[in-house]
Structures are given as structure tokens and as C-alpha cells.
Image 1 (cartoon, rainbow, N blue to C red):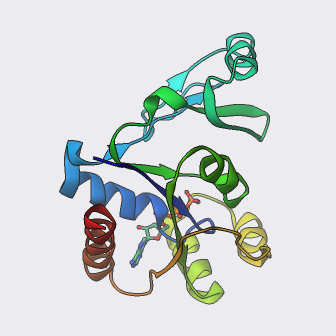
Image 2 (image 1 turned 45 degrees about the vertical axis):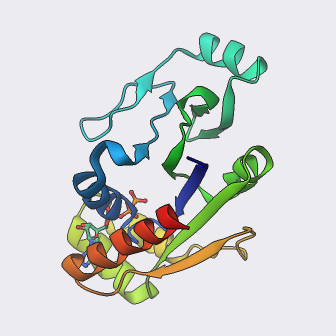
Length: 176
Ligand SMILES: Nc1ncnc2c1ncn2[C@@H]1O[C@H](COP(=O)(O)OP(=O)(O)OP(=O)(O)O)[C@@H](O)[C@H]1O
């Protein structure tokens, strides 16, 4: 079985977590939902591994991570040894696509998209951030995505329909 990397990207509120959760229910251990190391405690919705900054730096220095980054003062890293044969699904920011393309032959990038107005409505409904924050998130402009195999995934449909489309997309990649 080939190693395939499926990267999930898209703006905040596009539906990345929702679709990944649905894929987990469908595929279970047939897909490797790749975990990460983080230099902070995981929140209740995450199942990542905590590591302190000192240990993180030693691992990073020794090329332990396929990809690592810093966001809001914390370090995140995806160990190379977490990548398995078959499909590996990883949610990351677009800035890290190249890390994986440099290391692995088969990398697919799925960009979850939504019109800004709908994005805003969904973020408001989710209610995790305040209005000002949401406005900033929605107005964020992104540069063109540079990816070898870029797949645009429109998440306008109902969760039920989008879930089906997302699962068939993953099955197509699995059988390619
Ligand atoms: N197809 C859909 N139809 C309607 N609502 C949806 C759909 N997909 C996701 N949502 C809702 O939109 C909100 C944002 O989705 P989600 O949290 O999965 O986005 P995200 O891309 O993971 O965001 P973030 O990057 O901020 O974590 C959630 O409240 C979710 O229930």
C-alpha cells in the first residue's frame, strides 16, 4: 500500500473539523488521522500529545518532525513516524503544504471553501469567537494556494450531503 498524504486546509469556519469528524466515523482505523505534538495542554476536543518546549526543540533540531510551526506562541509538530502506509489525513495551514510535498510523493491538498457571507453566518452560529474576531477571520485575504494536487471542496451543501461528498472524495483518493 502506498503512503498517501491528504492535507485539509481552508479558512476558519469552512468546516474542516466537522468533515474530519464525519470521516473518522466512516473510515475508523482505515485512515490514519494524524495526531500532533503541541507545547500546550490539548483542549477537550483534541487528542494531541503535550510536550514541553525544551523537548520540542531537541526533536525539531534532530529532524524528528515532518512539519512543525509556531502559532499564537505555541509550537506544533507532526512526527515523521506518525505517517503510515495508506491514507494519512492531516489538517494544517496552507503555509505547510511544501513540507509534505518535499518529503512524500503522493500528497493531495483539499481546500474546503465557502463564500465569505456563509462563512460569517456559520462562525456566528458556532459562537466560539466574538463578532469582532469573526469579522477579522472572514476578511482575511489568502494568497493563491501552491499545491501539486489541489482539490477544491465546496462545503455549501448541508452537513449530510457534504459529508457524503467528502467521504466519496477520500474513497477516490484511496483507490487511485
Ligand atoms: N455543511 C455544513 N452546513 C452547515 N453547517 C456546517 C457545515 N459544515 C460545518 N458546519 C458548521 O460550521 C461551523 C464551522 O465548522 P468547523 O468548526 O468544522 O470549521 P473549521 O474549518 O474546523 O474551523 P476552525 O479552523 O476555526 O477550527 C460549525 O458550527 C459547524 O457545525
